[in-house]
Every structure is written in C-alpha cells, then in structure tokens.
Length: 411
Ligand SMILES: Cc1cc2nc3c(=O)[nH]c(=O)nc-3n(C[C@H](O)[C@H](O)[C@H](O)COP(=O)(O)OP(=O)(O)OC[C@H]3O[C@@H](n4cnc5c(N)ncnc54)[C@H](O)[C@@H]3O)c2cc1C
Image (cartoon, rainbow, N blue to C red; front, side, top):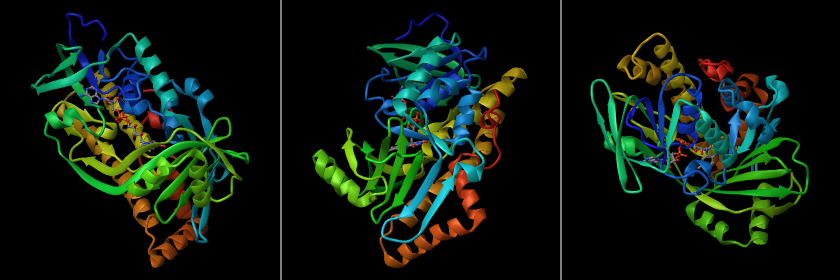
C-alpha cells in the first residue's frame, strides 16, 4: 500500500482500479486535481477481473478516447485492427459485412488483450504526480456530508480515513459503493455463459472479425496478433460446463462444427474460462457526491463487445464535466455537475442496452419463424444502407452527441 500521508484529503477518490477506474484516473493525470485510486487486488493477480485472459474489442470511438488521453501510441503496437466484420447465422442464408472502406475509417475497431491495456493504464497512473494508488486496499465504509465524502479503507488489517470532494464508484458489478449507499439495480440473467479461449486457424485471418449467431447464442471470433483468434462462445450453463471439460482435440472439433471452415482448420486452443452473462443496470448513476462508471453502473452482454467501450464513454463525459467545472473554479462534486453527467449519458446507455438485448433475444432463439426472421433481418441490413450504417456507427462507438475525448481531442 502506498504511504499514507497526514493530508488524506483528495479532490477525487476512485474506488476500483480496474479498466474503468484506471482509465478515469489516466484521463485526469495531466490536471492538478489530487486523485486517490483504491484497488483491492494487486495488478498481475488473476483475481482482479479487469486484467484476466480476456481480450477487448475496442471500437474506433474508443481509440479516439485513448488518443485524447495520450495513451494510444502505447497501445497501438499491441492492437490488432479489424478491417471487416462478417455477421452470419448458422444454418441460415443471411450474411452481412461491415467494412472499413464503407465507413471511411482506418479500422472498424481493434482487439487488445485486457492484461496489456491494464498494464499500460497502471504504468501511466503510477508515474502521474497527482495520483496516489492505494493497492491492495478495500473500501469498508462511506459517509456523505454536504461538502465532502469520507471513506474508510483497509489494507493488511490497517485502516485509514480518506476524504474527497467527489467519489467515483468504479468497483464493478458487485459494487461495495452501491451497497453502502443502498443504490439498487435491475438484473436480467440470460441463463447463458460465455466460454472464452484463443485459437489458431490454418488460414490467415486478414483482419476479419466474425459474429456468428447459432441456435444456442452468439459465437464471436476476434482477430488477434500472431494470426490467433479470441473466441467468445455463448452457451447454456450446461453446454459451457461440457465444453470446458473436453480435452483440446474434442473441444476444437466441437468449435469447428459450430463455426464452420471459413478459416480452415482450427489447430490450437489456449486456456478456457467461463463467465456468467447478465444485464445489470444501476437504478441511478449518481448519488449525492458520488458518480458511477463502468460495470458498477451497467454490465451488458458481451455479444457486441460494448461493455468497456460504454465505460470509456462514461469516463470521457465525466472527466469533461469535472475539468470544465474545475477550470471555472466550480465544485467538482456538485449536484449540478453530477446531474449533467447522468443526463448526458442517458441516451447512449439506453441505446447500448437496447442494442445488446435485442441482438441476444433475436439471435439466440431456435424457433423456426424467429430464425427465418433473423435471416431476413441480416439480409435487410445488407440491402438497406441506412440500417447498415446505424449498425456500423453503433459498433464503432460513434452514436449520438460525442464528448471532446470521443472526438480524439484532449480535455
Ligand atoms: C466474456 C466477456 C467478454 C468481453 N468482451 C468485451 C469486449 O470485447 N469489448 C468491451 O468493450 N467489453 C467487453 N467486455 C466487458 C468488459 O470486460 C467490462 O466492461 C470491463 O472489464 C469493466 O471494467 P470495470 O473496471 O468497470 O469493472 P471490473 O473489471 O469489475 O473492475 C472493478 C475493480 O474494482 C475492484 N474492487 C471491487 N470492489 C472493491 C472494493 N470494495 N475496494 C476496492 N476495490 C474494489 C476490483 O478488484 C476490480 O479491479 C467483456 C466482458 C465479458 C464477461
């Protein structure tokens, strides 16, 4: 744990140093705001959910945000560009393709390993003069007053008090901040698990991502460096257990059968992991002097790789509100500022809930008329340029009114 000095008052305390919390701290690293980040697990432990074996499909809009943060040059060498997204329906005729040429962008998105993004964010946080990282340390209590928020954090059985003008909850879908403030959430379980792994195909991937809808749920193949693919396979809990237990050869055979031979033979599979899938939405994104970001505020199905992209747009908006108010000499934890943040995020969040939930509901349904309908809808997407454009804009994270960082501009 970092040295606790006598002056334990901060402008901002961020609870959770996962992808969302660390990104917010990095967004504010070149300001003179005094920031504390409290993270329960040391980086490099697999217990820390943000930095596990998963990969992230980052939208073009998220690349712009990282550019605005001055971090893209560090991430780019590790990023695999996606030039084409190929969307198909197993056993049916509908297919659509989104391409970078149609959208006139350098790439539709990028694939990065969670761990790589986490390491770059931690490096940037640890070298910033205005950021103190308390790690490993956990939040225990939280009290709100008129002028400040006060928390007790614990590390190695030692506790200390910190105070701040604004507190940000970035402590994930099992948020302690939400529990302490009695903030509720709506929950919807999809009764599905995501089985993730990396595979090597015999053919070159040519920067193509595949989203294949099957009778069980979506199967995503995301291109990675060294001609690998990151696989996110949505299955019922029983099927996920069964696939998890198979030896490598049998697992590859089952995966091959579901995906087909577009990429030739699937030759090698990495470690497998499973994640339960649900939609979880906090009933409020703000409370007194507290703002919620990332999975604490909303946890969506990974069908279209929207979760962290959505979190980055929370961060871009919140940091813009904070910096504008700070420069104008305002109160960065004021009700006015936090209401503006919540209001500005509303439409985007709703759009992503609708987008992911509709995809899951429509494309995980084995009933024949629904299956025909979804084939038709894929064909419609391919034929009608307006629908296709909307799908591409949503996938690229460029929908609605964009914050400065989302346009690649500095704060
Ligand atoms: C299978 C799968 C695939 C995905 N693929 C994509 C994708 O391609 N693209 C995309 O954009 N998103 C994707 N996501 C979503 C993405 O992983 C999440 O949106 C992202 O990890 C959320 O980060 P977070 O920091 O909000 O939460 P978390 O990763 O949960 O981090 C919360 C942090 O808070 C800490 N913490 C918790 N409680 C306390 C406490 N009391 N005190 C101190 N610290 C605490 C935790 O240790 C943790 O580090 C995927 C998700 C899944 C499940």
